[in-house]
Image (cartoon, rainbow, N blue to C red):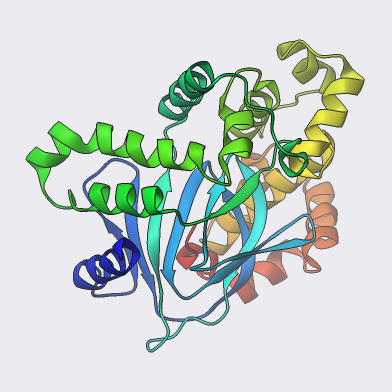
Length: 299
């Protein structure tokens, strides 16, 4: 029942295609009414709950579908290709996007583990997953609806938003995606800390040894756990993150050379070679074919 009420709330609030700021920090409603082809983006730690329509993301060749049957958690910064192939005026994509507050989720995950005891993850949850999905539970529906009832009510938001957001996070921790989220934000989340550091310093020269030392692991253990978490080696991850950021900036109008330097490339010829190997087009060809497309991509 709450999912239908959430859909009605979104339809009432979002009258045009795009994102709608609820007034709650990190919480947005969205409505997309035109198809968007897959394009490179960088997903940040977030929760996406779709109530109508669907979208897709491709991570290292593996396709993930976001639909109304499950909500989806991205537990770490991830370079992906994402699109909304079937959106239209009569079949819009409707949903909620919540940028995860890492400190709040970490505190809650550690508290949850302390109260609930040491929960042994199932075999499906034994490795950290950058993208985890879960069926809507009654607790999740109710918590999300209660949070969204605060939309556009500044006094209520100031008084109640933090506690209601914690209720949503708690419902996620208890749900099917809880194991992956607890591994990412709970005790011993060194790989996720390393990934977040890499994501925020993608334009710098950082070695695997630097990252392994930072989280107290040997190079071999760090490399293995990193690949479990992302399905990519650290070097592949950094390259994908750099190129996705550059592709997005170029499509938004940034000069190709500036975009290359902004993501840490010194050699323009090396950037062009890596870019064409990744996307099948030169940066200039990409600029002509994709300008403004990525700017409209829901992330």
